[in-house]
Amino acid sequence: MMADTGVAALRNALETERAALRRELNELGALDGTGALDYDANFADSSQVNAERGETGALVAKLRSGLDDVELALAKLDGTATPAYGICERCGQPIAEARLEAMPTARRCVTCSAAG
Image: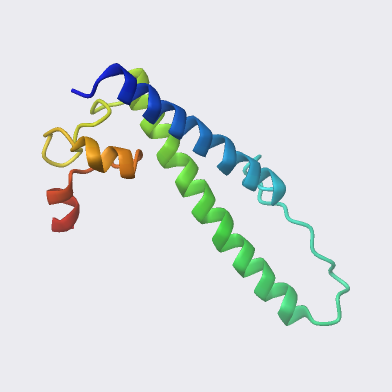
C-alpha cells in the first residue's frame, strides 16, 4: 500500500482537479446539470450557433466525465466506493504507484488497461 504522504498528495491532486473541473463547468453554465447555455436565437448564422452548441456540448460531456472519475477516486479514498482506491477494478490487484501518480483517477492496472 502507498505511504500516507503519497495518498495525501494524490488526494490533494484529485481535489485540485475537482475544483478546476467544477470551475470550468460553472463557466460554461453547465455545473448544475442543466447544460442551459445561452445562445442568441436571432443570430444570422444559425449553422454557426449549432456548431458552437455541438462543440460546447462535447466539451461539457468530457468535463462531466472527468469530474465523475475524480469523484469516484475520492470516494474510493474515503472508503465509500469499491474496490478500494488503488485496486484494479478488473483483476483486483494493486495499481502501481507510478500509474496512480501519473493518473490519479486510474481504475485499472496497466495490464488490464492494455487488454481493453
